[in-house]
Image (cartoon, rainbow, N blue to C red; front, top):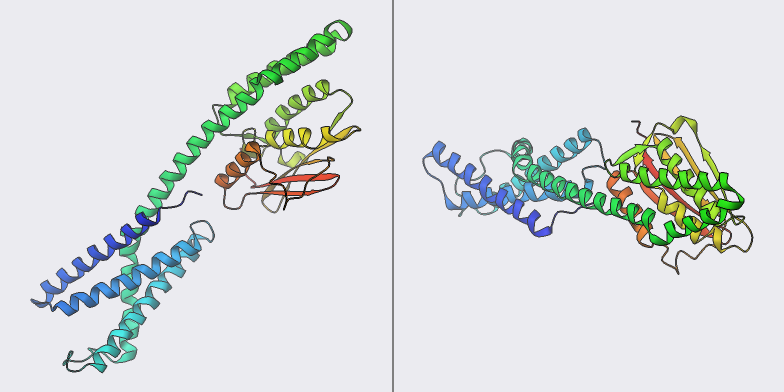
Length: 344
């Protein structure tokens, strides 16, 4: 997820402390007709303590880790407790230094703490307006910019993958070899290749499509691979009918399938099998690609080329609950994408 630059976050807090302190100092001056410098300093310390605590807690709970009502409750209590602690500190200072504060505390200790708690909740509103709202707007803009850039990169990657000279040339060579001996198969491959290229060009205009459309495209892709590597590849499709109308990012699974073929199934001496499984459970869509290749040591060999890294980033931008998990051992590699279950 796009992160707010540290300098920008500190600037928001500093600006909010200055503005809030100035507003409260001005209101006090209008109300009382005079205002002591130490009182202004006390306001600045109080504001900085409360806003700093709010900002720190807000960064820790994150915008997507808890329901909004829970975030508000936590932040309201944070503001109240920080303010109560600050007011209690001021009470103790005023009590310990009567020569500096001859009038002493205005209220008893308990009342000071309680009033401080509610003052902190009032300051919570200023914080939300001056710090959190600009931060959220900035973060959303950065995320949208990254999504747009990534979407363009994905579109170009898919077009390059499908129009890659080796892919098209090898497919055409396969078709040429079948024209005389198996003309029906050659015609089928020509139609399949045309459908793949058409779907890629049309798919570049949207970011999501249904599981049904994703699997249909992958079947055509697999059909060509099976013909090109005749007798060496076998695909199995295990797609739960109840999830066919669920949506996922366009061509999200293509790099996983291609990875399973080239780095798994085709590395076997005998025929290699690739299984695509898509199921739905507990509000999630689970998409897994499994092969019977030699596998690899996850600790010793970085498994992610550009294709898998792109998938992982797309999954991360899709939702905080989404994930890509890789499990590999000799004779079996499984890549599983988990997404929130949504329908078109």
